[in-house]
Image (cartoon, rainbow, N blue to C red; front, side, top):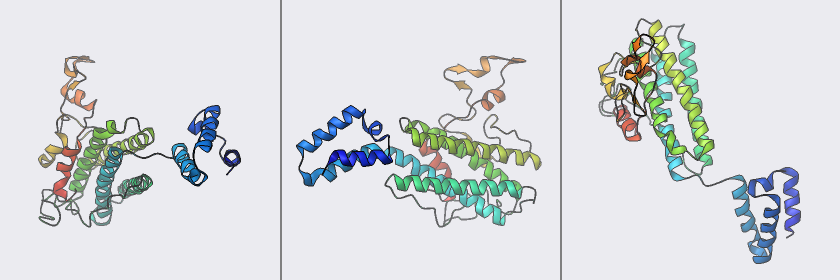
Length: 287
């Protein structure tokens, strides 16, 4: 087996093969050293190890866990919009926006499934059904929870959508730190996080256009209009928090005096931990 010939053939296809491993001189030295130390029969395995180093890497288990967690939530959100689009009394003018969000969630699901599979894991599957009323989960209590009119009352459908989107944004933020050092996965997660934030703002805008007074961003805590969603705006660091990095925002001077609580909370979003999020979605039958 002529290592030089092999490398020359690879270099014709991928001119950056050496940069993927080491500077050219060092890479060549390692290749020749390898060839002189191991038996010919073991050469394919040694080369395979080098190619794994060049073109792929083992994905740490904590990273896979974050991806599976994200997929679990995306399955749930996607199912909510599919059912809502098909069953809720959505005005014709709002249909395109709901369809766009529905399709976006489906793309998030497909993307995460592909990434998890490429990482060597089996993607978590969607539940056969969810209790979108937030009763006690599926099947027990299905349809009898505080949001049981979500698909018969458009105002409730939008309110629940807002709560789910706000929670999703906080969920992604809560685990982003676990992807530090994993640039590819962190970039992808932040890309989804940004889109979820746009979904939340769009749903809030749609609510305002349908008669509910609300801003495009979280104001003061639970501004959904439904006390059953208090937990979604709470957490170890609640959305009512005005302390950022040790600075009390309401002690700072604003345009017309001290910055108000509403303005302080609107300027920052707070994360939710994995445990907090899973506890919030458990009544919907998500786990």
